[in-house]
Image 1: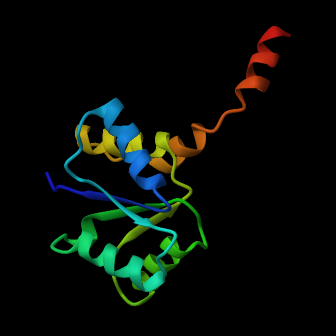
Image 2 (image 1 turned 120 degrees about the vertical axis):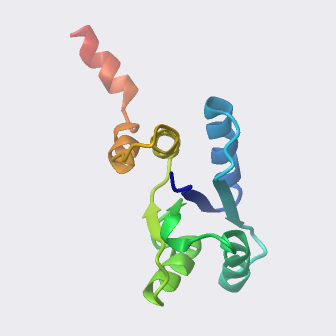
Image 3 (image 1 turned 180 degrees about the horizontal axis):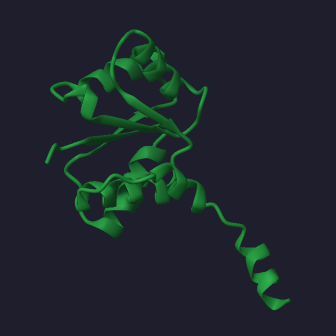
Length: 133
């Protein structure tokens, strides 16, 4: 089985926190990486850190989850894709998205992890109110 890599990218340390939460649930993940844009850094700093993180990886086996479409981390990777790099980039990352991706890799199955990420967004208050009716 081809070992795929998942890189979480974010403003601040959100990516590191999401990785820690995913590993709390799923156990340590060798193929889960993070790159964070810190307050004193700019796009070039982030790009250097991202390139260092993916060095040696087969880019066709790299998926990147970004916190926000249109933000610096996603824009830097988008520019790399527009420059010809074969990287899968998804924005709007959340814990259900990451867990579904990890599950699919652990089980060797293809998964619609984007749908799982969207399905993880639930207005629980409204759901509970509807249950009372």
